[in-house]
Image (cartoon, rainbow, N blue to C red; front, side, top):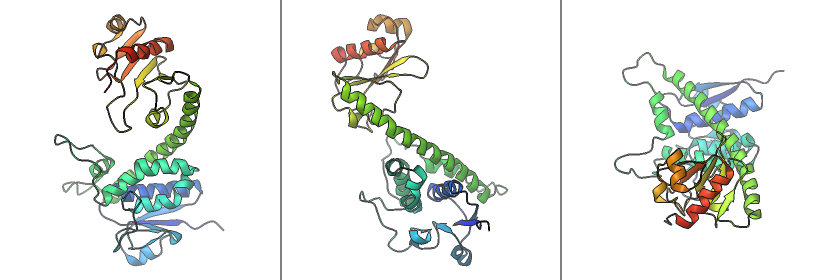
Length: 302
């Protein structure tokens, strides 16, 4: 006998990143398990009681029964860092590792995507506006998908399903990136270990750079092949989430391109130096290394 269609249930009305991503994660899981499902948006208790997966509604958290609400008195717990769980965090805590086929990858996504969504949904500020400007975060993307007060013919449930499709794609891509990030980290660590002068690390692939602060404590520059066939030299930041670098490229290189860059640097195949002095590009690996070597001698330390 065929498996019955699973009922995925959440509240009706307006939607947010929390319920959208909760739904997306469960959809990905059920597709992975080759199980059929339907999404129901309701607040009717009788319908909710029959759900196979219920999130952000129902007033209950019980992962063994696939109940993932966080609105009940006392909430549904909080992380060690103090961020309370919203429904996405509760869902991810149960199925994240299964979706990623890796506890390490699931942890990366928990920190990068899940925790920030939970924080916003629970009214926890993770940043302060600067100069009256705030980041345009995922929540704002999905808010833009909701019908406005004038759009009487735009169905809110249809728009919710559109957002779930978007979230599925984002989550699937984040899973790919997390898995490949782990492999990149392993490869880069080995390259760092074998490098004698650790101030300049020459990578064999264009690995993601986020891990360099933690993995390369003695390095100032990373050399890497770019997808267009050129080679980049990039500074290493003082901190992971900072725009300040351990050492900048020389001030006189800022914004120079092609002939001007080659003349100012003395590197014949130099192509470009970013005006913020965190990246320079050459046609060859040797040229990129030379740019980094010159920056070691002449660049500014922050």
